Image (tube, rainbow, N blue to C red; front, side, top):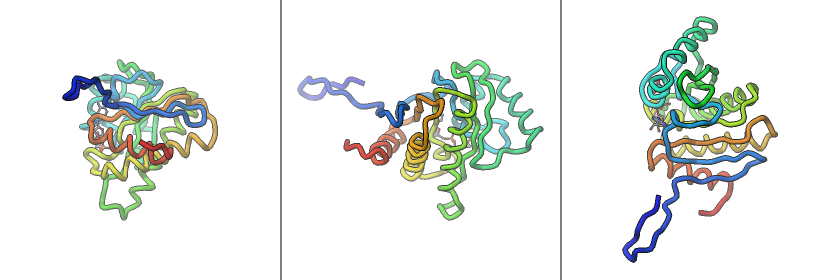
Length: 201
Ligand code: AR6
């Protein structure tokens, strides 16, 4: 976004940051995940996979009934989705081809394995994208809305888990995007991104 300061000089307010990690473009942007054109978008779902509020509601509304029908089939086959796990469906009317549904932890204060479960939600989603030979994936800020995970901690876990996964080896993935819905959340992820990659601001 271009902003005019008092002297009429145009400055650029950063609304995205990016870096290359082991041949993969990793970026942090402000935006609406339902509009992303990556091969897959990740849904911050709940174990029922039957939709809900927040990003889950937005994805089901934008994608239509087809996503819910596939979720119903998955649940009837394998039961509710445990926290930290992920499954993949097609995407109905969305621009992305697939939706990867994962369940982040509900924040209970940090003493109930929340950090490990949040890392697992990111890692399992990345593994599923790679095992389906996808080249790009977008994530929302899992668990930091209705599930109450503090965004400063969640952003570090998210960025750390994604960067560790990318550094572990080359997969089909060439692009990973964190799509944040509000500027407070964007700033937390942009800071965590710089910290994890050791980039000065
Ligand atoms: N694009 C990107 N991010 C979004 C969008 C969007 N369209 N809409 C909301 N966000 P939440 P959780 C952000 O509550 O904490 C649901 O009811 C939002 O601002 O969606 O994992 C599920 O069914 C926040 O930063 O997910 C579960 O029951 C982030 O997405 C429960 O909520 C996550 O907020 C999951 O809670």
